[in-house]
Amino acid sequence: MRKKHENLKYIWVLERTENGRIHIHLLSSLEFKDCISKSNELKTEKHKIHEQQLEKVWSYKRNNLGWVDIRSINKDDCRKCSLYLASYLNKAMYETKIEKEKHLYGYSKRTLKKPIEQKFETIQDIESILKDFTKEYELTYSSSYKLKINNDDITTITYMDLYKK
Amino acid sequence: MKLNNIEMLVSKVEIRKNKKDEAYILIDMLDLATGDNFQIFDKNIELMQKLKTMTKYSLDLNLTSSKYGLRLGIDNIIENLGSV
Image (cartoon, rainbow over all chains, first blue to last red; front, side, top):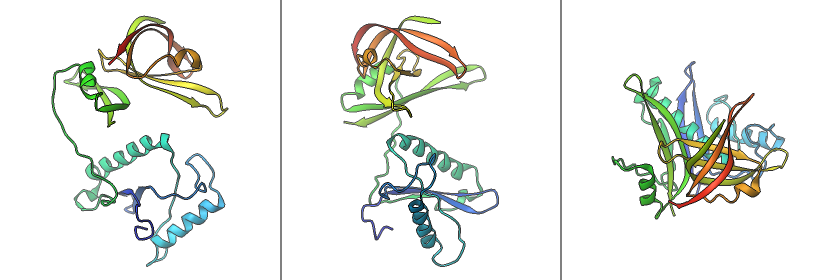
């Protein structure tokens, strides 16, 4: 795939099922030109042919190595997919027996940049934090949830996506 | 239930279409004091399009109950309190 598609972007997560088989969730920038159905649509014949081709690639050394399910995602689905993959990343890293294996997840290092994570503490309120950041960054998404701490205390966690303008 | 004179930051305004191709507006609001987020869906596009992103507003909200659960809506836009 990488040889065929020069700028291919992808991230994959490996998970072992309860019966010990492995399956891989892979999110890629590969385009199939409108013949791949979304998760809530019935698969077309063209869609099935693409899946069969990938199954052949996957099983090129041995027979019946498994099956492939491809689905197209649009802009709105991206966040759901990233959260879905993130949940599998967490699951694979902390809950299953494969935690000590090296390749739990991978990504195309040539075409995707690894995000830089920075942590800092501040006593500013939300408005002044936003004032500081919105000169350079654009708020694209925000959500909040309640978290119980110290038995009965409930605090609000506010999550914000800020993208550089 | 009416919630009068609430200060909120409008963080996102987006026009969307439902399965019947009818347009509706999605508004993300952030309570700057508590950090709580609310998402409002409204069919009154003309009125709601007046809301600008990253701007604070004083609003009257309306909390109603339906078979799908609680629904929060904007009853009245009182005042534009300026951008963040």
